[in-house]
Length: 470
Image (cartoon, rainbow, N blue to C red; front, side, top):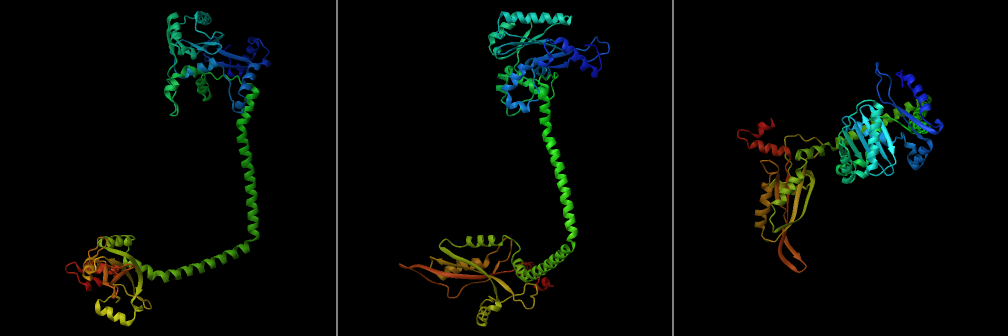
């Protein structure tokens, strides 16, 4: 067509379509592609005009009815192959592409920006096919009026999996003959087996060309989908956005209405609202005071726990070392612990223990005791049975090791007032008589952290208890 402005190009192409297509345009679906750029000194613009009967397209669309709502383009096989070849840089100079399908053969000539197509009903590789290829080449040379030098014949289709067919084409032409086996400009997903793709690449050229066009990367963008189908696809594509827009608008109106309704109710009930707020504040104040009182009541217990050992691994360390020093012929039957107060014991027991080892006498640990509260100590004890029926064995192998037991990296024993509970040692009677075992019970008091620190400081030369307390 003559070089005209892009706005006038469509009208000129429409006029040419009426002249060139020998059918009523109502029965035809057609589209055009500008194949050459507009150059000031050029005689005209090269336009590719492509058309198909509507009945043929309707038959194709009926076969893929399930895909119809998502269908956006319909392309002919030779143009899809051309898009793949041009995008994947499979050609360098004029090339002849031979694509043999089940019922026909496509002859495609790609020469830079020029493109020429021909389909023949000859799906076999024989002398007739060679003649048709040579005839197509000569006809193309007559159209271009130039000395065209073809370099390559590119073969596609299932027929060219047979090496004999490839050799037949090579023997009848002096050009380089090759089969499409690799991709140059397309990257494969990790989910695709590259060996399988390369083996079947010659059969997938049309599908890959359609994919290139679908991604907007094809040089040829012909679409032979009927106009009403294109409009339906565009409406279907825009329908979710329209529904979302209406939904957002409705949501906005509902939100505004709810907001106004809430504000009106808030203004109507402001007095009751503020009264409820004041009541909630008073209730929270009562709960706060109650929690504060409870915290103060439990503060002494918390302080006592922290004074014994601030490490959360105390019990694990103590039980691990305690059980590790018990001989194999002694069985521990129970381990118990409890918080005790020296004030709860009878005066007789107090005097007896004080005279013996100062067992339950409360000692100051550097922290003053609050008036009205008694000093609490952690009392622990174990009960066991020894197959060695001698008190000396229990004293030597259980009592003394417990007296010397240290925890963590401490340098002084962790326990004090370690003793065998009077009257706890006795023979163990079984149903079948005495088996030579005796039972015993040992108890002790766990030193507080302050006591351990005080004793540790006293081990340092030149440090006295008075200096530490001061």
